[in-house]
Length: 146
Image (cartoon, rainbow, N blue to C red; front, side, top):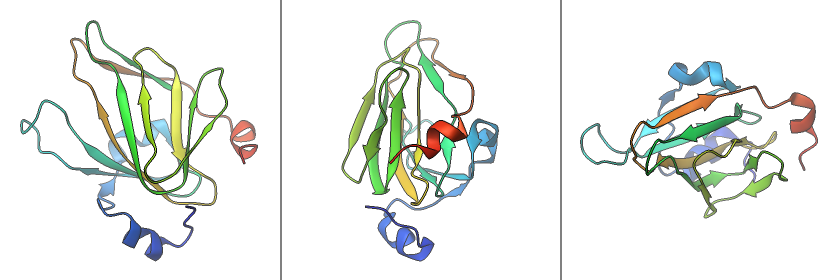
């Protein structure tokens, strides 16, 4: 469900906008916001609501893990977005969509050009987990998504 109006989106975004995601801003085109849903040390899995303004998306990236873990799960909660794995067509993300991303898969996700978007994101714990941030999602390729 595309939502362009910020006030309408704030009502739909039940997990809240949070703070500007300045720590990872270098890996995003546009502005994103991060609202942690669990406190550090409270759980072995950190949950966060990530909100993207219209047109915002993260760079291509890969989640690594030496053993176990490395898998990322996205639970789409408000607005409308995109998810794409390298070499595959982009998938439309709507509230209720769940995306399971295996470790070592190059991918990106973010809002559609004309909609705010939020998802809850978490990574399955493992040993020596890391994110490898890669190139930006090309503006030309992104603008062709319908």
